[in-house]
Image (cartoon, rainbow over all chains, first blue to last red; front, side):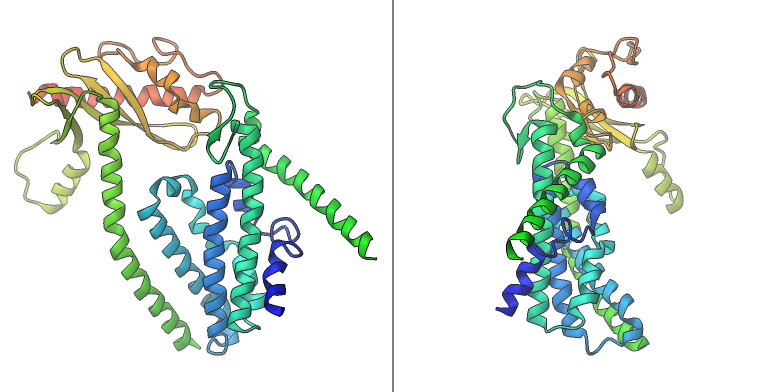
Length: 201
Length: 190
């Protein structure tokens, strides 16, 4: 039950993108299509899961004074592994996500979870927390990417549903589209949260 | 404290060197295969592709530093060969700076007529939705049939994409520069 709570928290109540508003750089930059958003989310989720579990495992070995550099080395190692493996086995995807994969190292969600959760909790709890946060990040990015792809390119997960050469809302594929979509989504999320609160109280 | 950090860093370096060792081979193969398959795109009737290296000064150089420099100046030309073992055309890579970074274009040229058969944008970081339209067939087709005698320049014989003048110009520059560079090497060496 407790583990389930650790897992679900990242998906909704403390969703990094929609509730905590952290890790917004990749959120805004790579969500030009649903598949890009999902891949970035899954890459981050993998790093979160592995680094949270390992940091939790090492929490008694790492002295408090050097914990931040130690965490960063652990995180950077997993990110580099993701980067290399993706480049080798998914070159097309790697070309699109390119620069943003190494930047997972400085994604504050990853270090944030290491510092706030993994360094104080058991390995299993940390793994569930990392997975929950990662998947929460993934669905947020996928939704954002899907909306931008539908309006910006007239397709969903690469399957086009408009006529060839049809005019689409190009702005949705550009950075302003990311801000507009995120703003609207945040408003909707706040509305739902406010309604839930009213019901419970 | 220092020891712990050093041990973590060492373990990390060890793991990464293993991962790098196994993946780097595949990464290089992927890159080479991707480029080769692109050559077939711009030389549709080729069944086999040969790589020719042409450097501006191909005398025996022994000094390793000079050899490296020469390697960098070497232009790779891809020769398309058909089933009858005849050379049907050649392909080369041209580069120019676009709006968001370097644009690399692969150009296929017909052996007999010296006309461009097709071009393909290999690499670009242009604005999605605007500059990225340089990848579209309708734009790439504007280069088909051009020869080394043509200006291959925006507003002269190539129409630009509205809203993406810089990207369009960069592609034209890349095609022209690559054409001029390799044409002299290719034709000169025959």
